[in-house]
Image 1 (cartoon, rainbow, N blue to C red):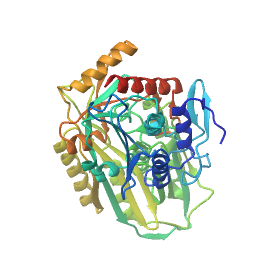
Image 2: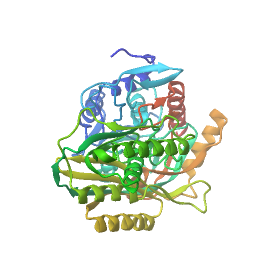
Image 3: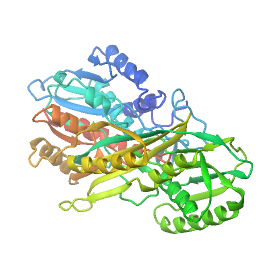
Image 4: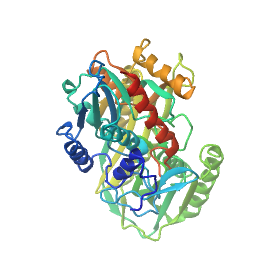
Length: 484
């Protein structure tokens, strides 16, 4: 692929190297091996574990031998999202990069600036013989985007640093000082089918054009959830007296991304077809007005499907699926009473599918308070039990409490004030973060976070400011030199 960034800047060159290597969550072996080869070629100590996490250590620069070690950390994986009309195989295709209005983008797909920027910054620093720094421990984790399995599996006994600069961040001057813990719920049900009768017409309900985005960042922005909106329409059809049976259903692709699109195939009784179209049109108008400020591109279509289907779900399964999706909690559940505008507890109905006779729903729960997660999960599992769905929970990860005293953070803030003339912005985030694992496993750890301006992460409109990216790299290099 043709390069679009200035290749004389190592941090740009390494970022584009990463974009040529498929590295979606669960598919990090190739990029993990790339990191190990990088370390070997430079004679650096490196460790790769069974999960594919990588740790690379670089000795202190001359004169920095007595300075406490510093850890740099980021994750290898990216969220793989694309527009429906884009042909791209995230398992083998490189990203197609381009510059638009000063922003770096990928054509029709996510860019992976989260966290390719952090990985590229670490590689550039490790590669630079002139960079002055204390002993460095660079940690590259896997599967951060799908539950932080890499951070959970990491051997923390290999790390001695108690000062950490997290590079999975955005906004230059912002540093996350607390984050939410989380949990994933998976609901399933075995389905029964019967043939579509001759007096039924197979129709398609499609919702698209929504903004979506990271469910930990945008959950309080009232953005539409395509799965919940589809359930609302289906419930509306049933309330209007339309007889229908589900045939197929799919929506969303990641439990931690607000789903932008959902497609439902359903068999509608011919006598009720006109009422179904009128009801769907009315609901589309209502929803469009509600989402005018948050999702101006919202679009809902409903009508006979050219593809058709030869079977549909039994009545009991159709009713149970619609009820579960309509009643399942979604969005902000509680806000903090001590920090303004901070979401305390939320959940995101992220992925739904019917495949090979099995229904599956994935929901991501978040809260800074563990008991709140337990309570919300209890309500969801009770709903599953009552409606006849099996369920399981997994991928639980810890939150991170605010450290009121941190000399390392004070030093970082002072350097930012000196170099950029700006104050460090302390952010209490609702998104989950690997910092919770590091704080839990490394007593006494102090941490800050750094990253460039990135917008619309986890969606095909993701974009990164290259000027900000280079500025962050230069800032970190200067800060490390100051630590001597």
